[in-house]
Image 1 (cartoon, one colour):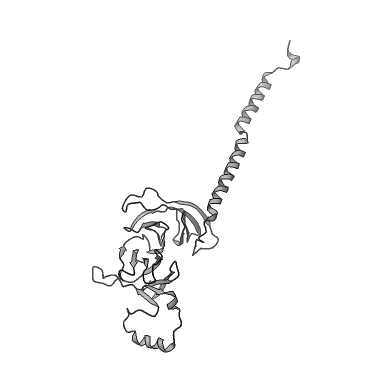
Image 2 (cartoon, rainbow, N blue to C red):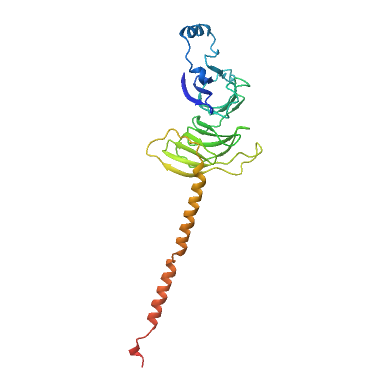
Length: 281
């Protein structure tokens, strides 16, 4: 057993974790870290006989998916977690879980202990490395242990589009309203364009995302976080337009080199065509 991912809910009321042979589990943050008397702890330990019984502070625990076609138990390999939306209550959460098998599972803690959707084969190489909820509805971003980064439609589990130009596995992502930032093992921080899923589920995605900028990092980055600040974006665009306009004015005022050369050549030809005055009869 090994814990591989821990995620705090957007409001901080709950947190979730999962890992190798560790089922997805949701906890009440306040109750989980509340101090309890020692005698009460010993009594709770004695009463807890079944492995699926919830621990103090634990409000929900997932159940493994059914056996495969050969009636063999499927291993629990949770690699990444993401809350889909702010929970209406501490007992109701929507969570995405990526697995080492390359699957993406969607859980509704109010509906069932098993996933309400299990999309298989999303990852191409080495399973899911990281997963994040996008800012648009029904949108999530998924990366594997290869060089693949996808936008996923949560209505049907289909890949809307993928990003090209990555030379390393994505370690962390930070979605914002306009862009997606990522860091990868090739030591690059990349800024990706994003587009919302089609209005109708199953329709063809017309616009594709791409890498709009990248910056090489001196050390290997492992985590990236958006600071939730967007006030500078509009000012930055205005400043950029002003600077571009000033640059254009400077370039327009400059004389073309070819025009100068042509004028110089014309003047030399005229000078060569004139004869000295003392040679005229």
